[in-house]
Image 1 (cartoon, one colour):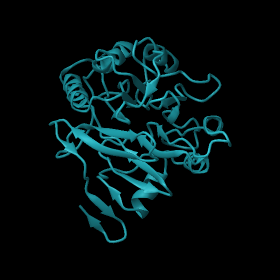
Image 2 (cartoon, helix red, strand yellow):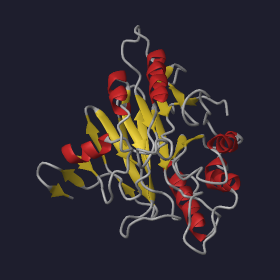
Image 3 (cartoon, one colour):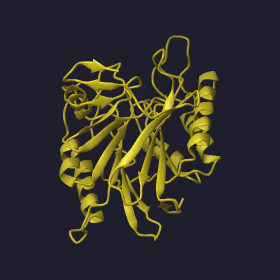
Length: 320
């Protein structure tokens, strides 16, 4: 898809973030996921849909339950509701997308075969698949904002380091250079940018422990056990105003750490674990042309919009 992304005539640009669909075989749970996606898109009329990983599930299953038999078709089915509406969409991969049956490079080719995707494979020399930038234009066709996409990988490549992967050094160096390219010294104010990846950075835990947050934390922050320095790079770049991840299905909080809003999505898929009383949904992000900030809220499976989430204050112990 070559159509540029641009702000609406009313000066807004709306993104819907779907995360952790865990699509597998088109069964009952997957159909419920599609119904949710359709409801959210009908309600929000997004200018862009972003899938933040674990779009499909190719990992181990319980005894007697078959694995995903056709990952490529599962991916096509997972994005079909968006594709059929001709809505531009972008994606990054998660740890469960390519556990078996398909490689990241192969799955990227499946993504790129769609008519309405704005996903890019990104530079081949970088770790992962799908490190890229999308530029947003203003009403006059001039650069107005940027969206960064990073492949946070799957599992640690080092035997002595257990757990999840991390955004690698060459990805961070590339990101810093892209930020500098898009914000040359002669530009008076840096263009606002958002960053999307699947696995949260360790600073999501620091945020919860030290700052007022809005939303829920019902499981540990399942980040890499090592800190790659991505958040520090974002701080030094100076243009990123918000980050968006998935991975932890029953965390949906957001808050500001050192001037950057760290946000979880709301788990969208039914073919995976959740929590009673925490319905599936999506995070909505709205940028406004000329403003260095964004609004965000949740749209839930029952059609309701959640604009005010419970307050978590680590200093007072208050929980909403």
